Image (cartoon, rainbow, N blue to C red; front, side, top):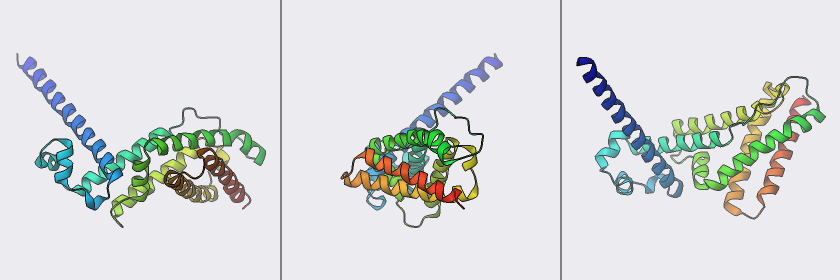
Length: 217
């Protein structure tokens, strides 16, 4: 009898936890959608609660401040971006590197990663811009989320490249390249005066040029 009661209590607790997690996830997705379209200062908790069709008190139950809500949305944008470019395969990475091998073994995977990256940019454009540009001035946590995302993007790229590229000078070059891709993709998203294909090709060419310059050192 006691064991049955304990199981029912445990099941109820698990159900409540799952419902709580699901509601929080829904609120985070809504925050991402709202902050993607409106500047941080233009969004109030009252507005958010009205859009979510819940009380302001319930919003504060999940997020103590508007900043917490914003950071949660930003982290979700980062999660979606990183999931979008998760490598589907992990090619053999051993062996010495050469310019010819880099072209043959590396650029195909880099192109695949860039295509996935631009798929995300095209599908979730405002969310992508919100992630990469932040929204609360010089807030250190926001800056950390954005920089952590950039470093993880670089790591994903290196996972798809020959192992010989994984060295400090190449990492430095690729960190700069990530910034180039980010700026180029935001401009493409906002201007649409250049084809996506051309922008991706330029990003691939700059990747190759950056790595070659780094290896020459």
